[in-house]
Image (cartoon, rainbow, N blue to C red; front, side, top):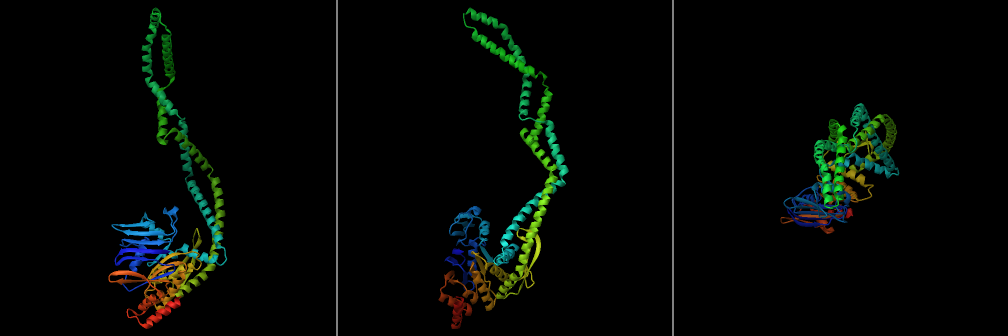
Length: 511
């Protein structure tokens, strides 16, 4: 519910604060006093309308799922709309978009002004009927659980089967492609790191001739080796260091010549061609490792294609069993709902009679299987489609649907906001609407603007919207104040004793 509302600087309103209670909250006041403006501001604070107020703020008891919304949940959550140069929205001082705050509010708030068909959506009507069935000691919820479980499993198997059948239509092409890809890689038969080894061979071959030529020129140093030893002996110097160096140099040259001589039989053209083959694989697959992994993937796919008939046969059998089970469970749901449909229709029309509306016709037809069965509930009002009835009739029909739903509600249903739902109704019709709203107020906090004494008298809290010079004010009325206000609604500005007497009777009767 909305526990507090604060408004600052909006048209004729300077600053007001309301502390609405649970139940049916009525707003009255002379025409032009600002009732609809106030309602618009409350909606604006919750992101479902917009206004030019510098600040409108609602403190609500709605529980927020922080994991889903990213907003920390408090005992009281504060929704706020601030308008300076542009509109900004906040929840618990955390900035949010208007779309986000509106979507969150829509889970708890219904504004019965324009034609909103959400209460007539099939899933909602099915839910109401199933709840009624459950409360008559027929365990439809267990049946629904079994159906939903089987439906989900059947849908999963059907998707797998459809995928296989689609692959089957392309199987020849897919097998040919997989075989082609495997053969192409196998023909080259790459080895991990082979490309690096070949590049090293290419590098050695490219410098072989030059290196051998420089070694040949350097070998003349060994022709003068004995002269160095003779000189060292003449100097009585140790010659071992020189001998070691010459031996090391000789070994280095011999090793290099042996390595390059080993490349004599290597065909440079073959090396270059092999490098190009491997490069083509790397350009296509990224690396030799990735090419080999791709080959293994295609081998697995080819095996799957070759075994597809076996897999398909198994899925066809499984799909047939699940399809039969889903159909059986959906038939059971339909049977229970058809049995309840007549009582549902009678109870709906009982509310419609109280609301001075013509009878509704409720029918059920079969549609494609979905998560809650194969049933679609259709409602017409006096054989007229809902999109063709008047807005007043439409919203009173919505009240009747909400009343049916509220009969078995175990928790608060949120907030209903109604702007002059009893406009252009007779006294009896207004009282009938008031009685339905009073019943709904056990499960909803209801804000309603009224110009009728009957609905006004049924309010559990009454706010008077009035003007003091050019400024709009809001005042919560006491019992005696309410008598005066309802008397004003009855007789106009010249309040008669008869009007006061009738107003008091209405209020005392509503208690």
